[in-house]
Length: 288
Image (tube, rainbow, N blue to C red; front, top):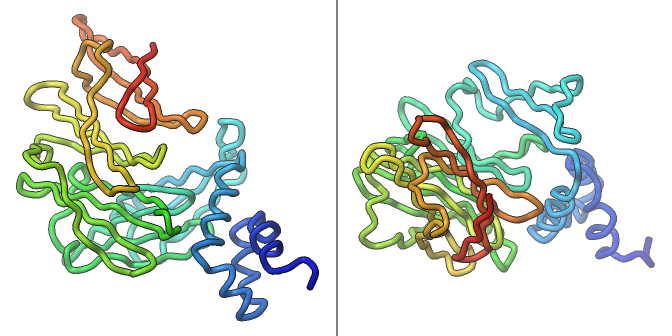
């Protein structure tokens, strides 16, 4: 054990274990608890877990929270588990804002004040990160966000709120346990209640959102990109090759590359779809 060294033990051996086992090893001694709780270990551990073939699907209904294993693209119903949320609240009062490497950003809708919670359903660990700001109105289509690690391995939580025609962007630091405001795009009208925001998806050090207007003009959709390094926003255009204003856009990642799935209505009112591949920055390559 002395010849192995702490770096080899924690970063190369224990980082390959399942989350539940890592939580158990925190009880070995104070040093292990400290080493297994550092942001560096959490980053290495989550990156190794993200490479596993087995994924999980978490579903909410009115009374229960269900977790299913996904193996080779199929749901394994035999391994289905019912889990509980750390707070005494009905699952119907929960809204999932974003997910990232096994972490979930969840809003608890209450009559007196809304709460924002970071939750790991696998390890059952959680942290309440909301402040007085979240006592205001929360809308399913008006609030969105994402998560990322910055260059110092600090977990950051981005929250975007659209209220009274204005867009407010804030970022939370897990290391500092505090929020700060970010500057949004000047002259932007995406805070109007005509727009519906999607959840953010992380790709290439950028979090991508769609802000769709289903009213006027019909089918208008904007791509909002948040650069996690500079912590700045920009609006991206669709490829010129696609001559349309898409009715709906959904982002997915395939082989660690971002793709946009576009759905529109033809002249015969039949739904069609196209797929575009997005470059990491501000250019898009289209393909059908």
